[in-house]
Length: 606
Image 1 (cartoon, helix red, strand yellow):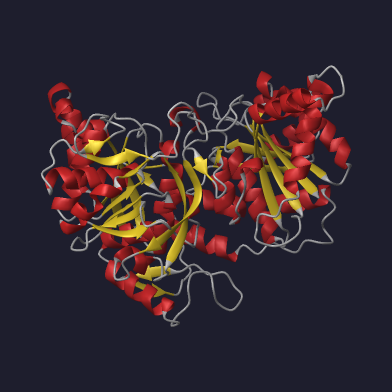
Image 2 (spheres, rainbow, N blue to C red):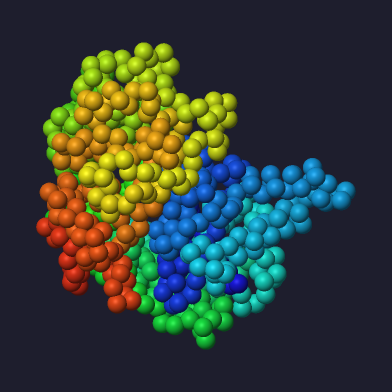
């Protein structure tokens, strides 16, 4: 097993996760099998109980693991399925060590950070690296490890010590350290400054780790004299220094690494030149260029609680992007704070109220993502009502589906006090109720989590057609509340169709309004399984409906399910991107452009 460690210096938020994912992509393109591990030095056992404002979204894995959002990047970039053990935290390590001490496994020894905690970290890495994540048997060739935080953080010291020991444990030729650092450009002088990176590397070396490759974040490519200066002061060959400069979309990052021969530097350190081939990144190149060339916008209003931080909905944004690129549209996301749609805001802040409703009314489609708590719920209900009454394409995810059910009960069934028991425990019409297997005393890991099967109970519905007319689908879940099964018959009599249910038939998974252009709610989180080139079906449905292309997409899916045509990624052994033009699948034609359009948020690229 070979290991690539990615660390970060100077400041957080440099893009270590995307860099680690991109390294995995380029090594995979060289014909190597790749797995990934993310180390988070916080004391939480996992990310499940943390606010999105702390670390962004909580990404959910097939096994129910609630993990850091960077594991979502790994899965999307590498098209793999990770486990909860691929996310290591201080909390998990210390819990494992204390459990061993309580069992007496240390045989009376004084339990210390060195060697007991550091040994536990190394053992965990070696064990998890051997687990296949790509659907094939046997371990991967390379494990990419990302160490969260910044070099010098006190909470990451045990991991740095463990990784220093680990580099000797696995031996020379099996361990490569890539250090991501910042080379800022000061507006006053207009030159790239190397001192922050010099200090970061000096600190790293002082802790027992020596970088083999420097990945320097900057606004533009490093100048030759800057590279030479970094090579001299950081003791890294200039050919092993790469620039990760600003690009139109992150799909360019693997291409940046390839163009700067980063894969050759990594393969050289790991003694893999005789095994690996030249990287084949044709699919990535085509996708990145297609994304840059898109110019016809599709506007999606994202009505949520955490709209001030886009990372809180990162997987939703990526799923929207995957679908919009497949349909050759430039995604424009308009963030609508749910509370700004409420009558109370009209009194307290009329400008924010008008701005929010203007965004909603100008949207081609409306999406209400998952969330917890009662803040903004009334605004989300108003958004669902607006979409239903004005026939605007709507997708509700998890809470967004429950919101649609509550709104339907209030507006169509005239249950004015209809609500979820999450928001009103005394409601006389509980449309959404607490699941009986849930815990009301412990928050962490007590929800309905992970991959669960949904069976289609209505064949002639949009969601079933989008999924290729399968009898069932497996999607990931994260919720404590569900639609009240005792009220389902009343909803169905009024025209709300529950097209997907769990294996018992008692838990509602998918809702639709049959006579609406696209009004779909799902209890699961389809965004977690969306991939570049393989967009989530319900997100594709939303974008297609917003563009007026839904009928063509459904017809194409019907042809594929009946054995005519080819699904995404199939054909002549070459990975392909399926794109849609006027609703019909077409072959991809290479496109180039000088303006880089990625995702736009309220008119601004991010």
